[in-house]
Image 1 (cartoon, rainbow, N blue to C red):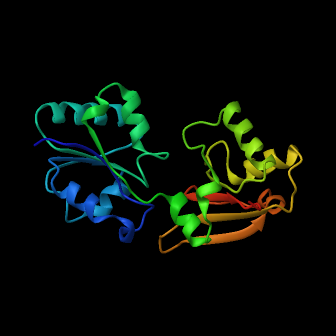
Image 2: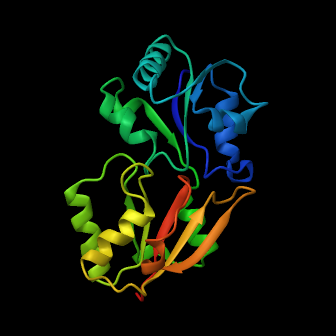
Length: 219
């Protein structure tokens, strides 16, 4: 039976790929994902393999939809969890698929892995992603959360709203420079690095694109 799976492949390490994800990839006729996601499944991919890039995104999704309509099982690999800064939103907005046809295989997000590393209970935290866009509305929600004293876990935008930019933005709006901040880079990978610092010091530092920023406040 044909399936259209959007599969969460975790934050990067093969150790965080779930058995359900591996099973779904093994059973797929077509597997589509970024190269670093495909690399997590070197022995499981049995069918057609397509490397997903920013340039061929729509064409790849169109091929996925056409393959599914032909009765093939399709696996779309999404970094982290598909529902948070993942492929699910993109797929639903593409207009190529019926929501009822989609099956999501959840994965561990970098937000989850970072929270676990720092022993943060994040049920009362605020989560933000700036990966796709940095709107005025998002900025307003961020500063509102900070003013409310909420612990914040966020995915910065490496091109336009980096940790340095975020720190500068918050400080300009009178956020205390001594507010504790943690930056989790390459979480779960061999070159994982966690930096404990303050909002004021982040302004003078640079971090990699694969990072989670935590603004730790008393809940």
